[in-house]
Length: 429
Image (cartoon, rainbow, N blue to C red; front, side, top):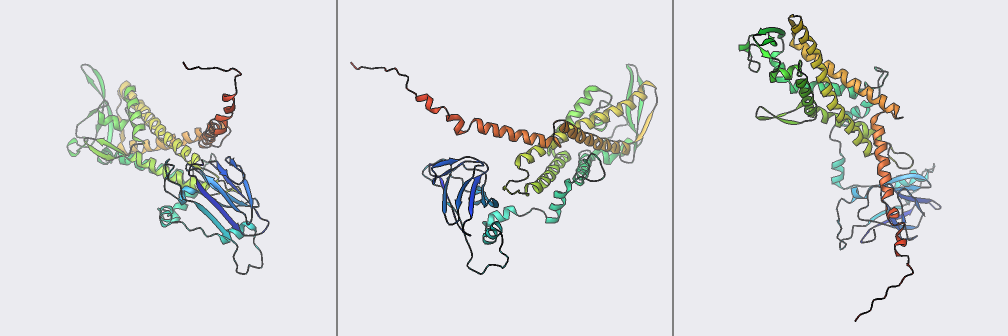
C-alpha cells in the first residue's frame, strides 16, 4: 500500500467543534496520523480545522465516504475522478487528491443550516467534460423515468408480477417471435392448413397441407409437407416426434439469446437476442432507480451485485420460457396430429391461429415462470430469486474477503519464526 501510494488530503474549515469521519466501502487505507491501517467500513475521525492526511494504495477501489457529526456529506470515487491506470511500476506515483472546504466569508442566512447542509452549500464539485458526457442520459429523461418507474406492481395482478415493464417485455418477446418467423408467417398468413392422414404401402403418414395453391408461394412451394420436413418442424415446434420436439425446444432456447445467426448462407438478426437486450436495458433502468437512493450512511439501496443477479435471472428465464413454450406448442399440435392419425379425421385450422396460439402460450409460460420464481424465493425467505442470489453473492464475497485478507493470511506469521531451541553448527574445512 505504501509503495508510491496516492496522497489524499481533507482540508476542511467550516464550523468549529465539528467532527468529521472518513470510511471506505471496499478497500482499506492507511492513516499516517495514527500509523495504522483502517479496515473497510471502519471510521477514522478528525476535527474541523485539522488537515487530515491519508494514503490509498494504487489498487484502491470503491468510495471514500465523508460525514460531519454523523451526517452524510459526500462520497468520492477516486477512479472516476482520476481515470489513469498507474499499473505496478513503483517509479510512477498516482496523482494526489485534495478536498478543500472553507466557510464562505459572505453573510450567512438568518436561519442557520445544519452542518451537512452548510457543507453541501459550500462544496461545488466540477467534473471533467468527459465525465459529464459519459453520464449524460442516452435517452430523454422522460423515457428513462418511464422505464425506471415501470417495475412498480399494478392492480392487474394480485401476485404482483404484471407490471408496466413486464407487459412491454411480453410485447417485445412477441415481436421477436414475429421477426424470427417472418418468412413463413408472412407467406402463409391468411391461409389455412390441414392435417391429413395419407395411406402408403409402407403405412399411414400425416401431412400438413395448405389451402393456397403451391405455385403462389416462394418459401413453402410444395403441395404438401411431411411433419419431418425442416420447414414444418419450425412451424410446428417438432410436433409428433419426441426427438424433433426436443431439438426444436433446444433450438428455441439458443435462439432466445442470439443476436446474429447464419441462416441459408447469410447472417440475419435474431429477434430473440434483441428482446433480451431490451429486457436487460429495462432491468438496468429499474435497478438504477434503487441504486440512486442513498441512505444516511452513504450506502446505495442496491449495488451492482443486484443488477448482475437480475440480468442473469432474466436471461435464464428467457431461455427456459422459449424452450417450454416450444414444447407446449408441440404437445398441443401432437394431440391434433393424434386425432388425425388415429381417427382418420382431417384437422383444419387457420395459420393465424397457430401464430396467435404460440404467442399466447409463450406469455402464459412466462407468467408461470415468474410466479414460480416468487414462490421458490418465498420459501427461501426472499421476495424473488434475484434478491436471494444477490445476498448469497455478497455473503460469498464477504467470506472470501475475510478468509483471504492480509490479517487472516498473516495472523500466524510470527509463529513461523519462533526459535526451536536447537542450534546447528556448520564448520568449513
